[in-house]
Length: 253
Ligand code: 13P
Image 1: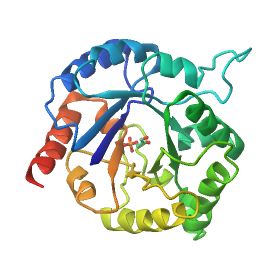
Image 2: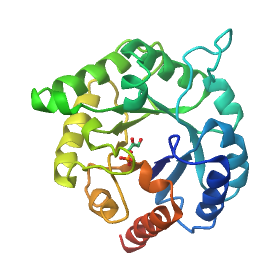
Image 3: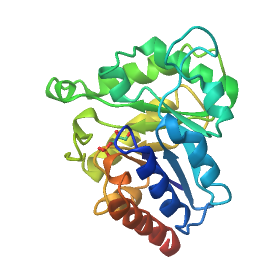
């Protein structure tokens, strides 16, 4: 099973989201071989979930609150996301950590909130350019994994990890990806680390400037269980060929 997760971030309008979702819903793929999920804006989440009914495409939330209920202006709980039909939620995305100031404890509590309501958390981890320059990649990833997983008050099972090097994430649609060979070796390291926390086989996805041209080179690596695509997933002309390439790979394998 390979995963194609599409994080639409805040790139497109509600109308563009509906239109793109319609096109994605008509793509044929084998849900036994490919797990496809879209993470749209909250504003169209339930609408898009209904639109995908019967298509095998799941939806996820780009973020959840760590609390279930209360006076938290602007926040959306994991429960509300579940009610809206989400199967997944991104937790600890670098844009949440570095732009919105979420800390390790927030991330851990969000994972707990997801588990509480039956959402599968997708824990995003990744080192910055500065970490790389200071040769602190493993230190950063270890810290993010440990702080998210060690003190969990719930069983550590049924989650996904997304390795997204911050330096590889596209800005305004342009980015420099981590090479598939490098990503593969980091994934191997992450999987070995994860063995300390869970006996589950945790899927580890790669994210950072994945596009139509390079998606196959990631998906053919054995330690890369799938991809989390940002900007290339927000336009039909790049996302539909990307899906087609991934589907062809499944058929041929
Ligand atoms: P890009 O594919 O735009 O680099 O974004 C990756 C990402 O952050 C997905 O969550």
